[in-house]
Amino acid sequence: MSRVYITRTSSFLPNSAVSNDEMEEYLGIINGNKSRSKALILRNNKIKQRYYALAKGGKTTHSNAELTALAVKNLFKDNPDEIKEVDLLCCGTSSPDQIMPSHGVMVHGQLPEMNSIEVTTPSGNCCAGMHALKHAYMSLKLEDKDKAVSTGSERFSVLLKSENFEEEVQELSKLQEPNELQDLPYLAFEKDFLRWMLSDGAGAFILEREPNKEGLSLEINWMEAVSFANQEDTCMYMAGEKMADGGLKGFAEFTPQENVKQSVYSIKQDARQLDGKIVELSFKKVPEIFKKHNLSSEDLDYFLVHMSSYYFEDKIAKHWDDLGMHIPKEKWFANLGTKGNVGAGSIYLMVDELLHSGNLKKGQKILLVVPESARFSYVYCLLTVS
Image (cartoon, rainbow, N blue to C red):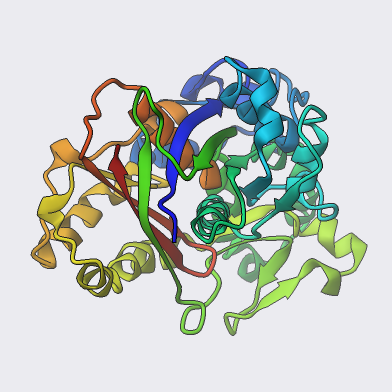
């Protein structure tokens, strides 16, 4: 089978960076009150700025498909006609602009300069971008395709605007019984939590079977993925509600009125389950994967892990140490604080920034780890600088 290389990377971040103090100027405030949890969440996640596909006041500036297409176009900014050589487009996201058609074909529709080609769209959350990369990687490795583009992107901001929660808050304000009000802080937190965590952007890679003749490439040595949904309940979800027994009730099982009044379409996360599971499970398969590929932590020059919050950084480091696989912090690379949590796009933005940093040298090894809390899935990838 062929060797496969990432020969070019790009990104697109909409508009100007948004500081912590400016967030509600874009997302709005709910029921006339500023969030009580915002300061705590931002203190824990340590995100200083992010990007929104919104103008102040909440007007949309870009769709997810547009963000992704602009990242793809950036791959070919020096040679626009080269885009016609692409014969596979793989686009991963957890926040498509619509349920149908797929996100991938909508991106393809934004690229009329591209030929009529195969397009795939992995469904999922943070791992969706990595699943797109793996489909492209395997297609080239099997010599089914010649030049592929994979992408990871999100446009969360439109889902985080205050108007999406106003109806529910109005309904809650009508509750009078004290026992009904007891659960309000937690009910609000599982939705308000993500308003201060998520942001927008897109990244893209070109994959080929030969490295660049000039400049650096990243050889994909292997990719491994695992899901723990067979043993874990849902943690992060959208267009559904989590039931008392841990099951998920989808939006189609609610009445239209319930969907609006309960903000069923909003993104939600069980923060307590997240804290207890996301790091622990990410290491469950690591010894097996390292043994399979004859890899040691000492072989690594860079470690890139998608973190939703810097709150998890020390927990991740401790788990490496507990396995006897210490990775010094100087080998870690992250840009969460300046780019925000872009879900399926975050690992693309990290690789793009690192590749263009001027710090990489041929022969260096880079480990990518992307966790997904939706129902606890993980993707691991080893790259070698070529």
